[in-house]
Length: 194
Image (cartoon, rainbow, N blue to C red; front, top):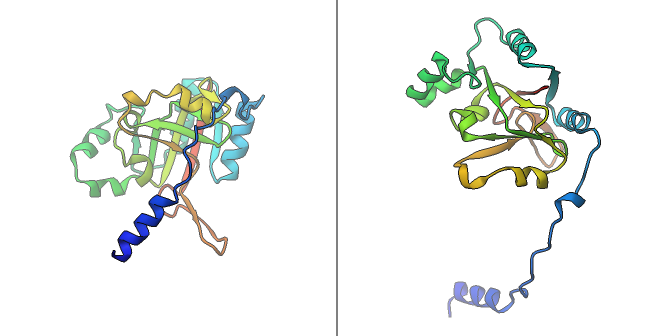
């Protein structure tokens, strides 16, 4: 018997007994009285920022203030934008020029500071990960306490791709050195509307 066969036979002979998965009661999971406050605390702790606006008119004003001159901004909230159509047909190299992406999110999770974004909202799968600055816009009423509640609200049978995005890109090594913007957005902001 080869070494490979010996190892595999040993693994097969020492498998743990099957056990039923535990029943997870979402309502017994972490709950927060003030979802927005908790969301902000977590998001800021992981390097992101959060703004609250009362309506879409105020949102438009804030977005205009965020967009600086000569920046390449892809506003996925308004997919009729010329730049969106152009980037969909251009080569992937043209995506590297995007300074800021503005994307709608479906729901926000207070427990983790994360926002769920589906492929449809991203316009391009790579968009929230290749931009220098990411702005996610979420309706305030679409906020839940925990990830269990978030998963209950997402119909995965209808989604080809999606992601929970929490703050800017970051990585840390064993020396406990945290690097923000290592392999994705250097800045991330969530704007809660309503």
